[in-house]
Image (cartoon, rainbow, N blue to C red; front, top):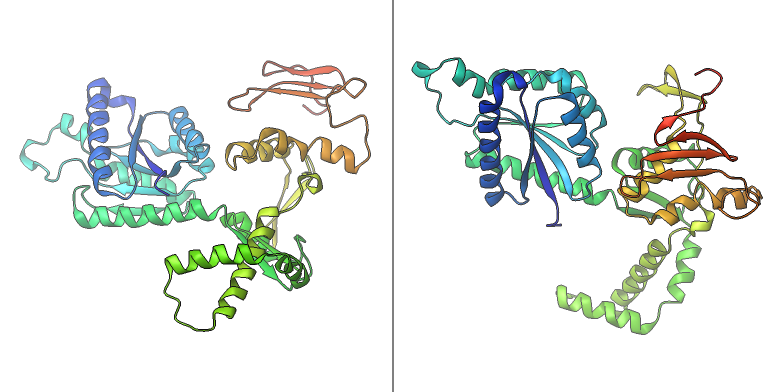
Length: 374
């Protein structure tokens, strides 16, 4: 897990001038470098953000960087936090608001406007704290001087928790005995835990496990027993019981690794359909319109965030769907099929051109054909 790092994003504004901004950048780089020496993961200074566009851009980059486990923000002085909204609402990584100041001491007698432009963290942190609270953002707030051991210890603890969040998003949990595998309306808790934490909790029949267990060989069990002996003190003479547990472990791992055949997976959406919104009490509080780009977003996230090969992810919305619906003229690029094509940037997967049944709908990012109500 040492491959993870955290990003240090500093809030400011153009009002203070290039000299102040240059000093802030140097100080932020120094703070990140010193903290990285004592924290469990590197803290990388990324930007002194002064505009809505800079903040949105660094958040987007962080979301798509698997090595980034979270963002730590610091406002060296007043940073108008309305410009943080677009970035914050899209942030998908753990977030820590670090309320600190560069100087340990405040020189009361020498304070002037130049000093305040550079060192007004209390003012900036109040503004920054307000917008995060206003957006109801889950966050960690750590206050104190950045060189204090107690403060560094709190940052280290938050980092470890944030890395745990990142690692757990690939967690797979097997449950045996339920009989409603993958059914959303009867598996509310499983749906919630995957939506909030990314944990995949699925149910398998005990009989399925027994079949795989029966196929486990003695050689496989012997190899796992060697691993046990190398890592644990075996405080029992009932070795057969441990071998049986090893057989179970091997079988469950095989089932997890096998997963579901890609041919059996399709994505669908209710694009432009009604999308009811419920509160925690289950009461309908709003009805929205489902977005038409849901499938695109899911495929892009599968590739960018889950490292699924593009050709595999695309099958869930193209050839697999066509095969299951028996649409022989859809789902594949080949002679005689409908000319439904999407051209995307190979690095970002941003859509550049869209062709539907031979008609160019979008060219180089410019919309050429609109719907009836657009």
